[in-house]
Length: 264
Length: 61
Length: 135
Image 1 (cartoon, chains in turn brown, blue, yellow):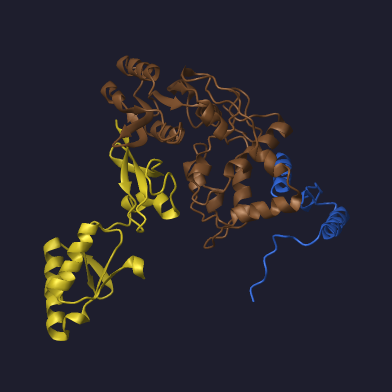
Image 2 (cartoon, helix red, strand yellow; image 1 turned 45 degrees about the vertical axis):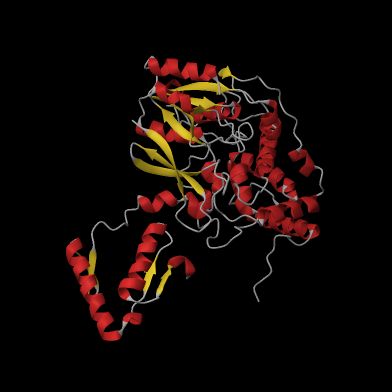
C-alpha cells in the first residue's frame, strides 16, 4: 500500500476538489474497483497487487467513462499505471473523457511487472508513487517474427481455434468504447459458430486496435483460452510505429492515424 | 484512410502467416473498364502462383 | 453519488465463477470478472460477462400473468396463487401426482430450488422435477 497515494487522495477529497477517487478496494480478501468518496474508506485502498504485483488490475478508465456520462460536470481522480495514462491520453483525443475533469494519481510498476508486460514505459508521467521503471525487453513478437510463413500460420491457426467468442477481450478493454462493435455485426462475423471465423475475428479486432491499444494486457488476462492476444496487438503497435511513426498514448496532442475526430 | 488500413492489414496478415500478396489494393476509375479487367486477371494469376488458400474450408459433405 | 462493485457468484452453470456487478447509484450497469476469485481468476464465459443483462431487462415480468386461451392477462398474486393451487389439486386428484412435472432453473438459488423440490416431492407427491440446465 502506498502512503503517498493515500495522502494525495485524502487531500483531494478533503479539499472538495473531486467527486470521488476511482481506485481499487480490498474487501474480504478480494480486490475490486471502487469509487472512494469518503476519506475514511481509504484504509481499504488497494493498488491491485495480490499474489504478484499488479495481478488484480481492472479497466478503471472504462468505468470512468461511465461515471463521466452520468456526471459530465464533475471531476474525478483515478488510479493510473503507465498503461492507464497512455489510455487516458488517447481517450481525451477520442473525446470520450475531458482532460480538465480527470486527475491522474500515478503509480509506477515494479520491474517484475514491467518485464511480464514487456512494457514500453512502466510508469505514468503523473507519478505519485512507485519507481520510474525501465523499458522492458520484447521477446514475444520477436519469437513469432522468427518463424517462417507456414509455421506462423499453423501457430496462429491453433491459437485462434481455441477461441470461444466470450468477447472477454473486447469487454475488458479500457479502450473499447464503440457502441456498435464489428465483432457483433452479423454481416461481418457469422453468428452461431465457435471458434469464430478463423482468423477474421481476431484480425478484425487487431486492426481495430490501431491507435487504441495501450498494451495493458487485460485482454490476455481475461482470455479463458489463453490466446496470446498481447503478442498480436503488440505487433500491430510495431507496425503502426514503423509505418506512421505513431506510438499510442505517448502524445497528448498528436492523434492516431485513424482518428478523424475534429474539434469544432 | 483505407490506404492506411490496408498497409497495416498487409503486414498483420504476414505476421499471421498469410501470404501478404494475397491482399492487393489498386485504384481504378469506373470509366476504365479494360484496366479493371486487366488488374483482376493479373491478380488471379499471381495468386494462383502462391498456391491454394490455406484458410479454405472443406465443403460440407 | 455512489459507484461500487459487488462480488457475487455467476447464476448460470455449476462452475461458480466470481463476478463483480458494477453498480452506479443503485443501478446495475455492467459486469466484470473477479480477478481474485480462485475459480475463474479474472476470466468469464459469454454468459458470465452478461449476467447484468437479465436483471435490468425490459422483458422481465412485473405482475403475475394468467393464461386465458391465447392471451396472458395481468392478475393479482392472490388470484394467481389461488388458481395455481386449486388447479394443481384438481389435476393431482383426477390424474394422480405423477401427471404433474415441475421445471425449475439453475438461475434460482440453492434455497429456492430446495424449496421447490420439497414442494414437488412432499406436497405434490411426485419425483418429476428437473431444471433447464439438464435439457
